[in-house]
Length: 196
Image (cartoon, rainbow, N blue to C red; front, side, top):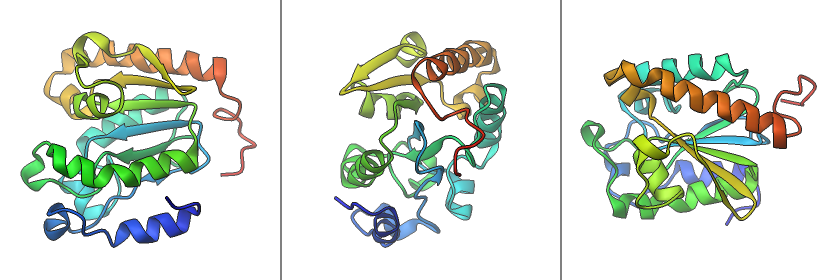
C-alpha cells in the first residue's frame, strides 16, 4: 500500500501483473481530483481509452461527461474516475475474474488515498465487484448501499446507454439522486473555492 499519490501512480504505470499488460498501448490509471468526495469506477478501458491513457474518453465517455454536467460534476474539478482494471481487455471483452484480482489492489490504494464519501459504479461488472456479486443492475441502479462509512451506488454504464437509449431517462434519475445525496453529505464537491 502506497501513502503517496505520485509513488502509487508511478508504480502502477509499470505494472506487468497480468497478460493485459502485454497488449496495452497505455495503462489507464485514472483522472480527476485526487481530493474528490465522489469517485466513479468503471470496468476497464476501451479502445479510445487505451490510445489516450484516460478513462471514458470514447463515445460512452462523451455521454458520461454530458450527464455529469447536468448535475454540476466535472472530471477535471470535483470527481475522480478510475476502473477495476487499468489495461484494455482485448476486443473490449469483460475483464476476467483473475485479471480483476491482479489489478484491484491499485484501485483499493487509490480509494484509500482519495477517501471518497460516495462511490458510483458504472455498469454491472464494476457494481458486482464493489457493491455485491449478485447485483441486478437493471433493478438496483440508483440505490445507495453503505459500507464502512462510504455510500455505494450503481448506475447503468454509458456504453450500455448508447446501445439502449431508452434507458437514458432512468439513468439520469440516478444522477439526480446522486446530486441530492452529494448536497446532503458532502462538504466540498460544489465548492468553487476548492483548491483543484
